Length: 287
Image (cartoon, rainbow, N blue to C red; front, side, top):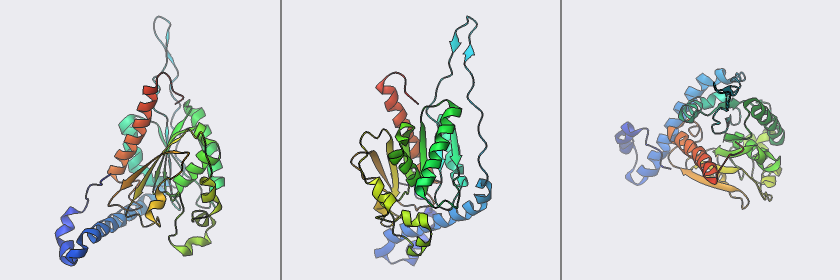
């Protein structure tokens, strides 16, 4: 995926500042850094709005009866989409993505918060599972799609792969998730959940184990300028038992992944493709 250049007006100025031999890579890095700074500033303003839990949407309408007495069942759309934020964050990071997904396909979209005091990925995955069961019961849907940013994607993957969540999760989209562990900021190891995101941790090792018959489709978006992923390829999913598609994103950083319109378009496409494949397969689906 080629992300649209967002700072083109600054190109002449940047070229004057940089040696010609460094222009290409350095300009991309400068533009990515500027975009990350702008997103961070905006997110700090929105952060308080995401501290409280999201209000639950109303239940789907009951079947309606025709004049001749036949019952018309409501058309069942694609499964609800659950958005799961990253480390030290909340649902406010998904303001733009949520609006895009809801407007595009009319899908029910819900954002979940997990506690900033969460210290264990396994515990967070179990809690996610309870939330998914509640959502399925409330909406009447048998499955959901999940979009997880950073740590949120790792929590969702653990739920799917290790706790039987593949029965409930149709598609899991991850954005900048350290599937193989990240080595960035060694001093952050004081936090136990950061240690679980390191290469070779027990959690990461569990995710390398066989997962035969896993029903969930995985789509991972990884960026060549993601400064939180070390190395950047760790945001790819490489597992022989998983149906995984890795999408390389160029020119944007970690914070931009849940915000950039090009990523939102890619997420919509991934969810639409899964829905289309199920319809082509024939008949009713469990969605």
